[in-house]
Image 1: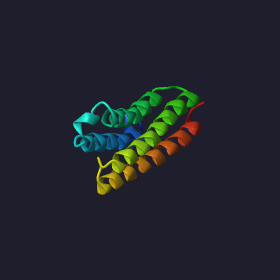
Image 2 (image 1 turned 90 degrees about the vertical axis):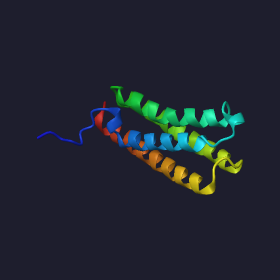
Image 3 (image 1 turned 180 degrees about the vertical axis):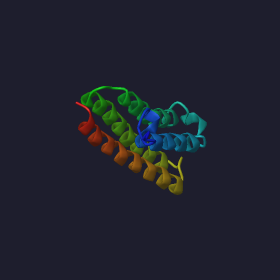
Image 4 (image 1 turned 120 degrees about the vertical axis):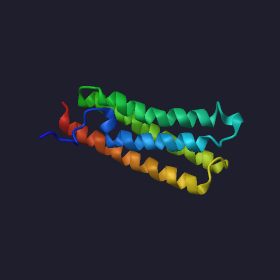
Length: 126
């Protein structure tokens, strides 16, 4: 019997799935940012959020725990960087409190899942 929960692609990772939802939230909320921020905070926040899922994808394709952990750790750093940028966006009035809380909550969830991914990878790869 085939295991339907088997992880075959980076898109099967819960960390990637939740990270992707976070990216979509970021793209939606940054549409309302001022146009003069297009090459500033808007660009930075988008690149940072995409970096999360990109590093998860790249780490997935690596063969050793050390390599996987390196990319997953970079993804973790990008989540933290994003959290900082979201605080800035909220504090300068680009994001409403309610939107901020939803996105911040999702970012915490992604952070926790990536931490779990790093720990579980240690047990499965040399």
